[in-house]
Amino acid sequence: MQSVGAAWLMVSISGKPMFVALVQTVSTLPFFLIAIVAGSLGDVVDRRKLILAAELWMFTFSVALALLTIAGLMSPWLLLGFILMVSIGAAFEAPAWQAIFPEMVPKEDLPSAFALNGIEFNLSRAIGPGLAGAVVALAGAGVTFVLNAASFLGVITVILRWKRPVRRRMAPIETMSESIAAGFRYFRYAPILRGVVLRAGVAMFFASSLWALLPILARDLGAGSIGYGILLTCFGAGAIAGALLLPHVRSLTSTEGVLSVGMGVVAFVIGAVGMLPSRPLLYGALLLGGAAWTPFMSVLNTAVQSLAPEWARARVLAFYLLVFEGSIAAGSAVWGAVTDRFGIRTAFLAAGMGLAISILLKILYAMPKDAIDLSVWNHWPLPLSTAGPALDEGPVLVTVEYVVHPEKADEFKKAMHHYQRVRRRDGAVRWALYYDAKDRTRYLETFIVHSWAEHLRQHARFTMEDRKIEEHVHSFVEQPPKVSHFIYAAEHGRRG
Image (cartoon, rainbow, N blue to C red; front, side, top):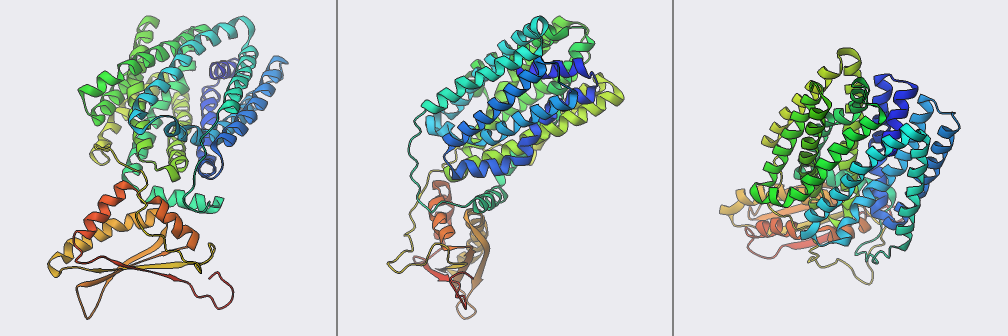
């Protein structure tokens, strides 16, 4: 309701396509600017408390937005400012909110949970816009903002009553700087995750045209605020149908097939909406687009969750949201500018064609086919003793000595250079593999970690999926590897 009220209020007080498109831009820009910090917070602090603080922030600015609108003091720039402040709260909340899904349902139920969440969200989107259109027409946008502010009280009550299970940490808690660095490091050395995020970002850049330009299309058709609400209701109703059909669709084709077909249908709808001659045809097209949207988004959301280990889940989701929402923000501004210069039909047609062409990214970045087990496999013996290093000591040099049969040396080296991604992803800042000049069967793997605490975290980050990689490495080894740990010997004090 707030989205409809804000978009229609901007149409009323400005009417310029760029300002109308900027409503969506400022709604998504904070996700681009602060998502990484928000994700790092979501993995370090209590997610329940972070969500509660964000809800209180959004409630405060939603109340102020409602009061100033009712008082007739709203201007285009002021409206954008309040939407921005509410969106900042949403950006801080989003990674933690998404990260609590696996705390509530088993991993095998995640696709169904996301589909259920899609039904909930799209049911709201089906009812809210139509209701908002009527409220705006009868009482003005300010009343929709009042109703939105009141809704935060219900969410706050639920969060206050939620008894989150106590989280047992297997490693020292990270500082914010360590958490941010670890998030960047994990994303850099997780190629499958990067591919999924890239495909989502490109798709949303083109798909954002629909949300950014639909208010302008409704105005041009003379539909008014009620008609705009009906357009969004049709899309939401289609999305609900898509969620209900999702299990059947998944049984008919692969994950890649669901994503490609969903993107193709949405691309067709975007390209067509600017050219349809009548409202009934437009309503039908949006129903179809909504039905394809839910499977499309469910595949992306489930893929990202499946590639996020517990220790970095909020950070992984933050990168996803950063690219996802940043693409929407950039796309909204671009398609608003294209509409200003070339007209709305050209903008929709270009966006639809771009989305259709982006399906070809599957050639380079295919969706993961097999389930990935990211549960912890903490089989390494912890390198502790009664006189062990202090947590802040470091850097730490870890060496692992292998004895390899000469005939297997090439395969071993290839496997080790694949294994280095695991080491770097989980904390290593440098990695190398050496062979003994006197004995070509002896190899020495070395990697450096910033501190003893960070090395202990490495033990808690090793997953069952990583176990497969390690077992492949060990298949070339003739005896158990020998592991040693060395702490930087500073001249003065503990730290190097």
